[in-house]
Length: 111
Image (cartoon, one colour):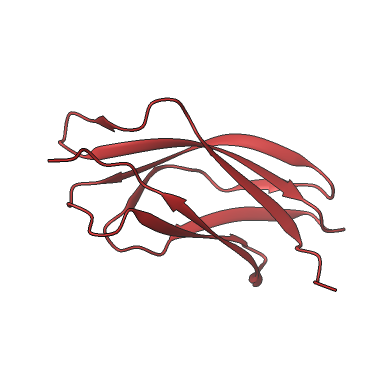
C-alpha cells in the first residue's frame, strides 16, 4: 500500500497555450489546486527544477489542515526549449521533506 501524500497538487492548463510578453518571453499560465491533506497547518511554496524556466507569478500561501486553495501560476522563458517537460517541486516551508513533484508541459511557438 502506498503512503498518503501530505498534500495534493493538481495543475490545469488554461485554454491559451502560450503568449509572448512585452519582454519577448514565452509565458504559460496554469491553474493550481493545492489541498493540505495533513493534520497540520503548512505554508506551501514551489521551485522550478528546469533552469531555463522562471516563475513569473506564484506566491507562497498557508493552508490549514484539510483546506484547499486555487491559485494562478505563471511560468516564463526567453530560451528555446529542447524539452517541453518541466518539473515542479512543491513543498512545505516548515519542512522541505514534505514535498510533491509534478511534471507539466510548457508550450512554446514552433519557430
